[in-house]
Image (cartoon, rainbow, N blue to C red; front, side):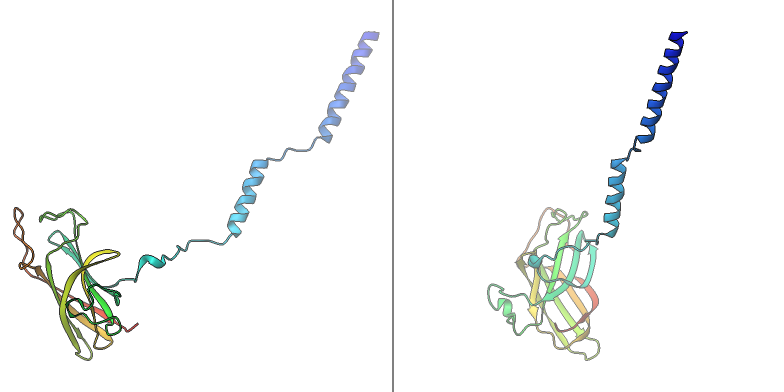
Amino acid sequence: MFNKKLILSSLVLSLGILMLAGCSAKPEVNSDSSHQETKKAKTANAPEHNAQPVDAAAGPVDVPIGKENKFGTEFVFVYIPVAKNVHPVNYHGMPGDKEADIHLEGDFHAIEDNKWGFAPGDWIPGMKVTYEAINKKTSDKLSGRLYPMTAGDGPHYGLNVKMPSEGTYDFTFWVELDTDNFAYHDVEEWWTKQEFKYTADYKKQ
């Protein structure tokens, strides 16, 4: 009888201790979950930084005139602000930096189906490039030839030119093989003289 009372007393005491421990225990906090929620809140309030840094050494931006692909070549015509420090000075009678308004360019590079010995991306040399531009409103006209040269962004055909007036111009470019200075063999016959017509605006900067 004594042993039963002792055992019963022990059980009651143990049960009381467990109950007290359960009441005093603090609920666990999921520290990882709390950290994630805090991080999300900070991210939601943080300013976005999508703008890319400006590369001051990248050079002037091209103003597009026209572009098309044919004969395994990408033909691109653009103009940029006047090209400075061109060597030699007065290259093919080119006006000086202060006299010219723009640098007119023709950029020709091989694409996948080129059959004249050039790998995709290669610059196409040996071209004779002439042009004419007529102001649609005033009928002011300029014409000339673009010559091979190179710059920080690679080789091209170009020349600084003086624009007669602001406005919208009809540009015509003619591109052909410069047979006086360039020859070919063991490839397909070279394509004939090509004409490219575009319309573009010019505004003095």
